[in-house]
Length: 56
Image 1: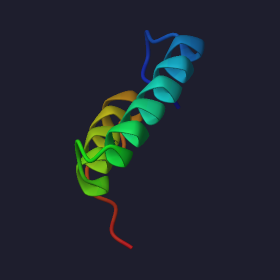
Image 2: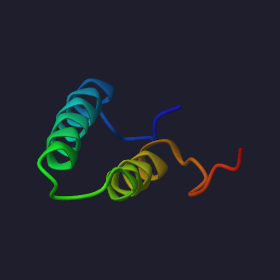
Image 3: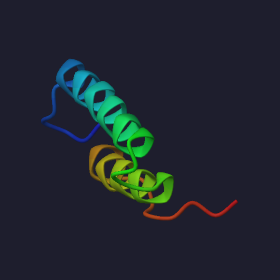
Image 4: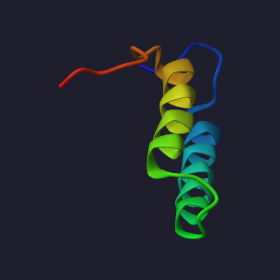
């Protein structure tokens, strides 16, 4: 469930934009895939209250 007080439709657009931007930054060599994953994980942790690390 999304954190209280956040607009789900705005957050969906934000996630899409972030994923596109991070993907582009990987392709042009600005950051590694691991660094992009860390950025996305940080955002999702705040958005959904997910654990910072998922063991698998």
